Amino acid sequence: MNKADSERMGGTLENIGFEWSEDPNQASLILYNTCTIRNNAEQKLYSYLGKQVKRKHNQPNLTLVVAGCLGQQEGEDLLRRIPELDLVMGPQHINRLKDLLQQVFDGNQVVATEPIYIMEDITKPRRDSQVTAWVNVIYGCNEHCTYCVVPSVRGLEQSRTPEAIKKEIWEIARQDYKEITLLGQNIDAYGRDLPGITKEGRHKNNFTDLLYYIHDVPGIERIRFATSHPRYFTERLIKACVELPKLCEHFHIPFQSGDNEVLKHMARGYTHNKYRQIIHTIREYMPDAAISADAIVGFPGETEKQFENTLKLVEDIGFDQLNTAAYSPRPGTPAALWDGQLREEVKNDRLQRLNHLVALKAAERSQRYMGRIEEVLVEYQNPKDKTQVVGRNRGNRLTFFTGDISELKGKLVNVRITEVRAFSLTGIIFEEE
Image (cartoon, rainbow, N blue to C red; front, side):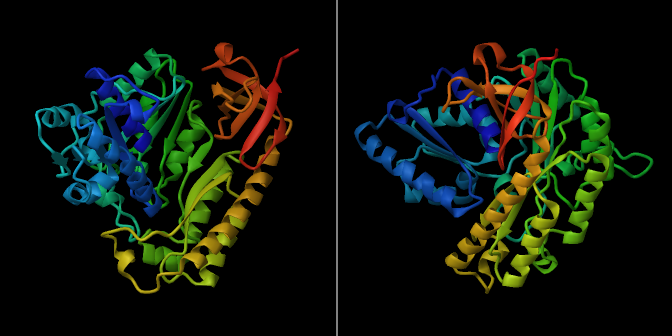
C-alpha cells in the first residue's frame, strides 16, 4: 500500500518539474512516506529526519515533507517536535500533493490530516518496476482490530468504481506491464460502499465480481491481490481463481494468532478453526496454491500455551511465507492500554522460535518445486550476480536463473527448478526439444 502511495506521489513530483535524486543529500525536496504499524518504523523516520534537519539549518530552501500514516497519526504534534518540517500529510491527501506543496512554496507550513473523500486517482505514478504494477481498488478499513492503528490513519473504506479501476489497468497494459497486484487493506470488503444489491442480497460490485470484470484486459498476463481477511473470505473467490487463468495461485490471508482467546481479544472475528477450514478449502480446489500470511506474537496477555497454539497452526498448515512481528503497542489502540503487556525479551524469544519454524516449513513447501518447470516473470537483474536474472513464479517464489536482463525483462520464461531454498528457487531456462 505504501509503495503504491509512494509511486503516485513520485509521479506528482515529476509532473510538477522535480527530478529524482538517488542521493538525499543532493535533493532540494525530501518526502518521507511513513508507516506507523510498528514502533521501529517511527524510529527510523526520526533518525533520517535528524540528518536532514541539520542540513536545512544551512540550506533553508530544503523542503521536508512527512507523508503517510505517521504523518496522519502525529499531525501538528510532529511540527511541534520538528519545526523544520514544511508539510505533514496523511495518506488520504496524496492526490492533493501538488496543491499542498504550492501552499508551502507560498511560504506556509502545512498540516493536512483532516478526513476527506479521496478524489479518484488521476496521478500518473512513478513506478519502481517496469514489469509489475500496483492498482488500488479500495482505500481505508472499517475493521476494529484492537492492536491496529490503520483505520484511524487511513480512514474508512472507500471503494473505487469498477470502471475507474479497469481504465487504469488498460493504461497499465498500454505501457507494456505484464502483471498487476490489486491492493486493499481489506480487499474482500471491496464494493460494500458502492450502490446496488443483487436479488440474492449480495453487493453487485463485490471483489469477486471485480475480478471477472477486469480479467480480460489484453496484455496483462498475471493478476495478484492482497490483503484478504478471513472473516470475509469466500468459496466463490476461490472458484474465481480456479476459473480465471490470469489469477495467480497465491493467497495472502493473515491469521495473526492460532489461539481463539487471543483472536477474540484482537477482535478478529473468526476462530483458528475457521481459518484452517479456509486453507483446507483452497487446497481442495487448488492443491498447489501458495499460502502466505501475517502473524503477531506477544499480544498483551498471551500465555506460553497460547503462543504454542500459533506454532501448532503454522506446523499444521505449512505456509509458503509468513510475515511475523512482535506485538508493538500503537497510540490510540485499545490493546496498548491493557494490562498484561509482555516483556520485550519474551516477545523476541517467541518471534525467533516462530521464525525458525516458519523457515523449516517453507523449506518443506519449496520441495514441491524441485525439478518442475515453472513459469517465471522476469523482473530485474540479480544485483549480487550480474549473470542472473530474477523473477517470481505464479506462487510468488523468487526465482533466479542465468540470463540476459536486456533480452528477458518483462518476459514469461519457462524455468526448470534445480535448487530449492526456504523462500527462493534457482533454475535453468527450459528449452523444449
